[in-house]
Image (cartoon, rainbow, N blue to C red; front, side, top):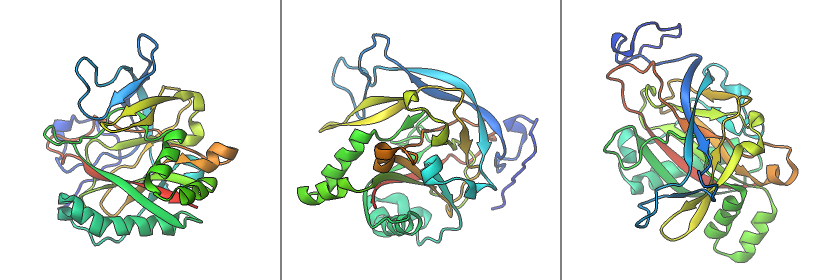
Length: 297
């Protein structure tokens, strides 16, 4: 299937461009940021159905128009230590579209590729634990859809909890926690075809102030974790990667103990799906997988 990759400004409406048009280049979009609870209580979010009488979340939204820079063509300019994201291209894979139809095939075929990729591209990494994955489809009937809210996946406390949760030997967990550990989200589209709709936006950590971030209790049925909401700051620099394909990977660093301890590397990357007004009518709904990993070393 051929794809149209126009890079000049499009003045036609989405209905007037080809259905295979891939939006590229600088743009702007409405992003949904965190707004504190009206009663100033501690913010929370239920991952699944909340208990009777409780809202899904108790905090609000703040929609802001944000300029987005396309990293296509400048992928090598960004690193995990500086920006908390890294773009990789031409990644070989034994997966096919149907690999992602079951958790079993994902773990058997895709997980080993993700582990090898992290060990190859993160200097000094010596141990990887892949602890979950999420398939997202921009389809109203899909169980998990793109998240259109700016967030960070982990707080430092939640990252340490993950170490203790997934390292079953307490002595080993304590020893590993004394060294450097990171949580990295490995993001890719399911299809070989370029992403046209609901692309992912991400802010360089170098432009994000710690005061922009707010810990939110993330309530699972059996335990509580923490994520971070992100308050809008006009100094934040936002990016996206146009037309990502199944041979490309985006590393999103959600936590880094080295940054927490000495502050000389980035710790986290705010990110969100967004609605690109240039997306043509009839475009492919975005389908993606994110695999979350503990990276030691």
